[in-house]
Image (cartoon, rainbow, N blue to C red; front, side):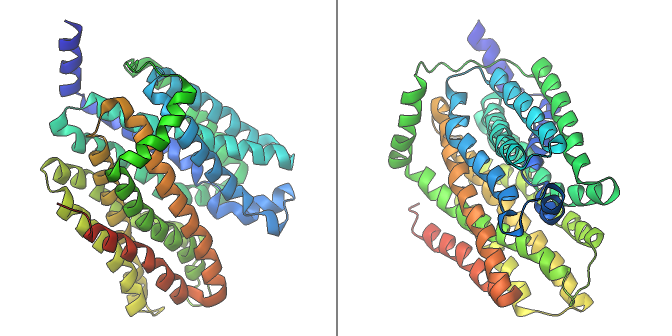
Length: 397
């Protein structure tokens, strides 16, 4: 009787719950990126040296990777709703601390905790896949991931605008309040899900290496997306510097508008999910990887500060965001089609590997732009998705 009810829930996940999960993922993941366009302002405000200012972004990323490896796997053994809500409450406290403290060390620790708690998104995504039937899993995951991707893309322009009008502290205060409200809402509406696995935490962590070693599709999908996410991070790290340079003379508000235009690329996520549901995973992956390569080739071929050059950058950002969004959803749909008992661990490993690729892209982007400018950054950035598509060509049908 219980099993029948469970199957009914899985086959009929309500649209409002999918929308809520997508919105929640976007709100949570945005916390990873609010500080990126505000590094200079925050550093001078709290007395952090220019040489150490990179820690403002890096510590949040390190916290997120740590959470992917050590907290997300708990989704396979702990009741998911409690895990999600607990992570959000911790995140809200860390956000409030970041906004109010004047102590550099406490500020940096709070940034790390923000990244750690924000992995609640990667418990929510497998949660959505459990509620969906096999035939609709790609569509549901695609819809939820479109919310996550919108959160990533909207976070930078949102933080720039809020800081411009109210100050940088306010973006963290507003986010803390939003996360607290979200935690309350999710605690009320999410169904309970207690995994059937009876495994100790240490054994759970030990099994992750075994999963990585014995799941070739996990390794492949992680490498594919690490390549495109590295180029994504490199592009969005360097293009604001290009637009604010003497060649373009963009203001911070104009850069925010440019970033908002690129958000339209997230529409590819639900489309890719539906294509994956139809069994066209392989050709869709090839198209997604090729789209990312084309997105970086366009501004290499056409380099001008005229309106044509700006239009090329807009098209490039749209194609880049679309390709990355599509490949992410296709990859997660593929991984979530594997054993339900290990989905959280598979997702944690996948996200940690490609997020590490993104961190490399950001670091290399800043360095290459400083030494060689925009063209050098693009030439280096295009190497990553080219490697991904060559590796993809070796995949057996």
